[in-house]
Image (cartoon, rainbow, N blue to C red):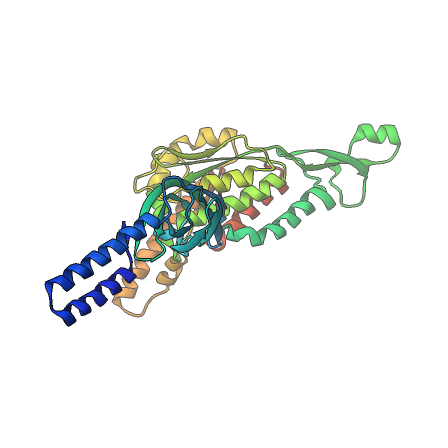
Length: 413
């Protein structure tokens, strides 16, 4: 049971009457009348046990956008339902309105729609709808919790989507208008055409020359249906912020752009996210739906405050690279094309330029040391045949996509 503001006003009016008459009888009469009105209001309020409550609406939304979820109430009783509904959402969902009035006639139904504008990725789940049923006097209400679960998954925003059109144009140019004449382990035969001045003489097909009597050359195109395994580090280093953006979120944005591009190029994209244990995986998803599968898998991930298994590919951390990756690098490079994408901090370059005072000089020295270590590790990896992409958060997705296209153009993928 819940009392309303009207009850408080009625009690105040009764207190004034008691003060006016200054008698015990007046007090008893006022209290009895108020109690009788409250009981009558509760008895005349629509029952809540037989209500049928369902939900419908969006189950996914991009971070920063708005989702709509509707609560529908069916009233099978004989009394009209005068109610206030409250769907219990976590604060980060920013549900509006938080509560809403609803009137449902006997045997009818009504609905209330809430809009959610979450400010964090992940699953936003509401398990309860609270209903208050008021009587005709509006003095008191019955209250009941109904277990009606609804979940909305908040997906990464994919801000790098703006680069996709340009990268797809580069891909079409690579695969379409300009066929590559360079053959590599990642290229396959496309067609024959007549030799023109400037063509590589190594591409001449002498059997075709003998058959046709003209000098013919083979053209090659980037090989399709290559398998790309994306390994996302969700360990302690992924929790750090660079330029106000978590490293994990910057990495996710780059992964989404690469997935969209590679799937359009005809390659198979798989995803594994882990630190000390497996956090998410997408394996064998069809190219037509792999972007949606990867986006859904990334949505609930958060960085874990634990060290990542050092056997994994990770950020350009000297200790992790030298102790964890390098001992295993020979085996990996022998059978795979390895690429490491890392989020660099532009603040280091700013600190390295500081010379204004003692504090700035010490900061510059520390920044120079960090930059030198990063450059040393990058050079060491490249000598081992590893492709390294090191860029700030806002440029990492485009840089990773460009590196992928370069591998395609060079016939290395």
